[in-house]
Picture 1: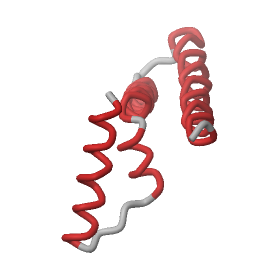
Picture 2: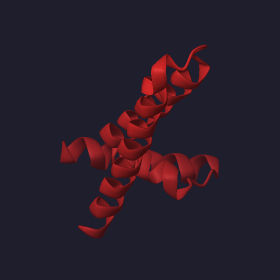
Picture 3: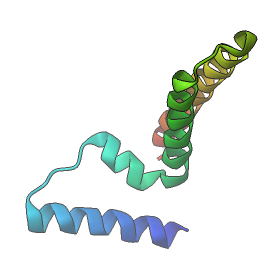
Picture 4: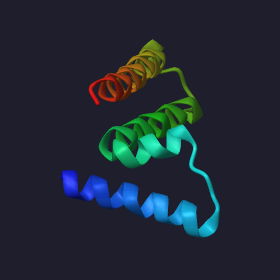
Amino acid sequence: MKTVKILALSAAFIGVFCFGKSLSSSEMKALEYPELNAAKNKMTEAKGNLAKAAKDFGGHKAKAAEYLDKAIKEVDEAILYGDKQK
């Protein structure tokens, strides 16, 4: 897994060098923590889907959105924790 991470970061730096595009810190984190960022993206997508639902479902839809907000915050905290462990 470490080799894949090194290759992904290397490819990003080569792309920046060759094409002159600088990556934002969030783009770098997406390369560094692909599983966490994929999970966060899916939760954000799920939250959007909940918002589009026509009914409130007796408050359960709102509660699910609340739990997704908490889960997204935990993923953000996990990424920050990972950055501190370097």
